[in-house]
Each structure stands twice: as C-alpha cells, then as structure tokens.
Image (cartoon, rainbow, N blue to C red; front, top):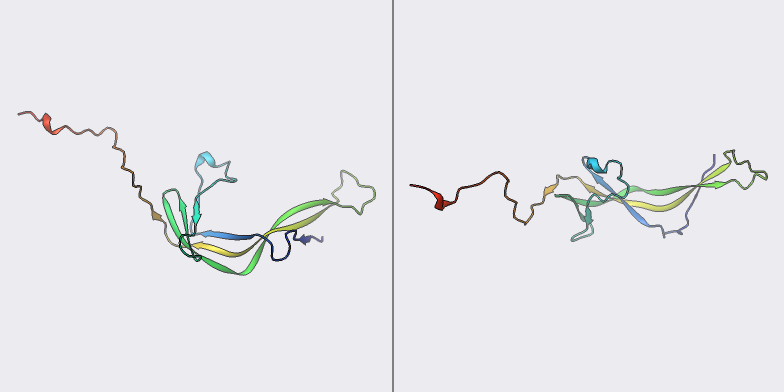
Amino acid sequence: MLIQVKCSCGERQCPEWAIVELQGSVEAQPSFQHRIQNLQIGLLCRPSSEESYTLVVGYHELTGSKQSLKKPILVLKKIEVGDDSDPDPDPDSDSKRVELDVIGIIRHKILFKTRPKALISSRPQPAAKGKTSAPASSVLN
C-alpha cells in the first residue's frame, strides 16, 4: 500500500511543536477520568531565558530545560480519500486511499527531570474545626 505524505502549509512554514517530557506520571482525578481530552493540567511558561521553562501543576512547580532532538519528528493527520480510479464505485467496498497531511514538526523537547518544588500559599490557613481554646480571661480562682 502506498501512502502519500503531503504538506499543505508549505516548506519551512509548518507550525513548530514541542514535546514535554516528565519524570513520573500525571494522573487525572477520578471525576475527570473519562473527560481528559483538552483538559488543562498546568501552566507552562518561559520566565527568563529561552532555555529555562517552568511548569506549574496544582501546588507543584517544575523547572525544565529545552533540548534539541537528534532527528525531527513530523506530526501527521490521517485523511481517507475516495479512490477516483474506479469507474463504478461500490459503496460497500474499501476502495479508499489514505493520505497523511503534515500539520506540525517537532524539533525540541522540554525536559523536566528534577523533583517538583512545593508552592506555599500566601493566604492564611483556615483554623482547624473542632479545636477551641479557652479565652485567657475565663480562668477561675
């Protein structure tokens, strides 16, 4: 089977993508288990230089670095095209041709290989329920 790869964005015009590599695993809460498509897991930013990146996930901050890949990776989209060479197309037959369209290219990865740093909130912590202290003026003699 011959699969044609085409690029509709033009040479040197393909969008630049990147891989985010984490050490460990990211697990979704049980309420999101079946709805993880387009789920935002954190905030990725480049604070000072192009080589340093920060990823904030919940109350954790990770610091990573940008690295070049040895070989670029293409991001492809599969397109099924009807076969025009058959003069009498049969709707039940599998005479569809497959083409791959280039939608992006990956040349870099952002590697987070250190342990996350815990973020501490500047808000005051709420008082624990059930703990009460006697006021100082209520001491009896």
